[in-house]
Length: 231
Image (cartoon, rainbow, N blue to C red; front, side, top):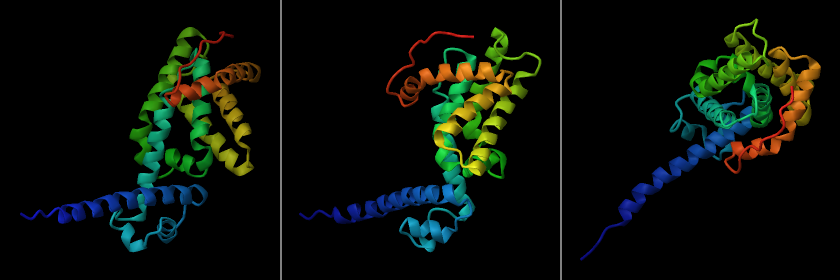
């Protein structure tokens, strides 16, 4: 009696190779695009150890590849930010800025394009949970009196988002360090909801004390600890 298992094994190998090639291609594209948003398909394919022709087996066009990279990044950012839990609305806003910076610092050039440029429609669905969290946080701050009530909460939430993106653009122009950019995004977003520079500094300092705990919470390795509430 003869068994024929080799063809079945052979039929699985191409699928496995194709999956590995796709992962390699997406990673190569992420690395290439973070330093040069106009990186060519040839450059990306070469970095992945593939030919341009083989790329078309995964993505019909360069735009399709770029979209896949951007959506994956947006989903990663959303997953991290929606896990943020601050002790109050203002601290939550500061921590959202902190986590956002940690996620996109290495792709400063691409990040603004993902939320303002032609890729905005591509990332809208992935980032919707972040925008919902931000709106609810602002509404909670208006309700407890910590955030200005004279501007619509939806407008303020969008201003916070625009401010954070503006910091990313300024960081790229000015070559801000990681620590300076992280601090600036917290201070600027707090200023967008009406805090003075002194109050924004106090909240950012408070957020800094829970920075490590927030990181553990967003990565599933711990929970936020209670800290003193200061106004």
